[in-house]
Image (cartoon, rainbow, N blue to C red; front, side, top):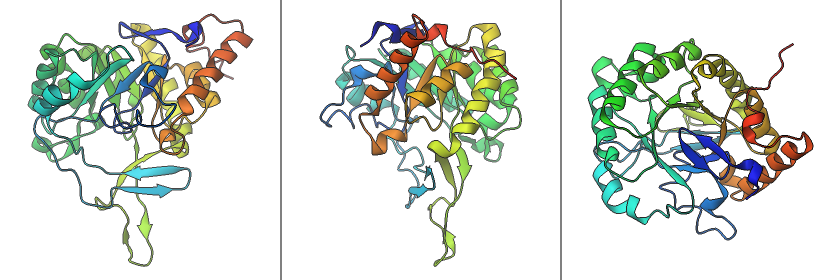
Length: 309
């Protein structure tokens, strides 16, 4: 791995600025069976979203291809916190990369419980998915309400000493204000952005293709939205030295570099892996070459260098 790719994120020393995104690589093992792929090529791996109790997820169809993107509504299918801690975490090769657990809940209390369980493990950090609906508040997503976002981060902060990364929803009015509330509640880092809500329709059946009717849109189609959101969040996060994982439609080194210039300290790769599992090596090489060309010694020297018109 090129030396100029090494970076620090929430106190973790990463070999690369690339983070494999939650839900795209299972519990860290899905792509390791592919020849040429290694978790050592990335700085960190975000494991699949985990809830306190096991979940079966949504009915099918769960995934639908769309122009320049993909809709998914998996529904957080997972074996539950205890199973992940007992059966999965011990199998991870901690020498390859850093591992981040993604946690979810349907109530503030559940988030706190899950965070508390993982505090006693050797997981490197906790990512909070605040795009889940709060069943006690009529199904309103935590991530779309700054006060609810604050409460979730606050209870997780009280229940763990691990670095906390809050995954922000783009489906809200003012993402920068929400980011600031999460920072005030104790978030050590921010992931920007989660998927954009969308729909696809089967015109013969005149029904939504996704069994859940709607799903999260990812892939190149959302890149311009994600870039703007990273820039907006960076305006508040930089004043508090809170790092950002920039994500949303990154498929090559140019995309990655754009996100870093906009304010991302690291960049998340997800949907691109589905059609090019070895894309991370190409992105690493491209970022390294760009830094050398512009006589920069590190990714950090490029972060937030955007010159506005």
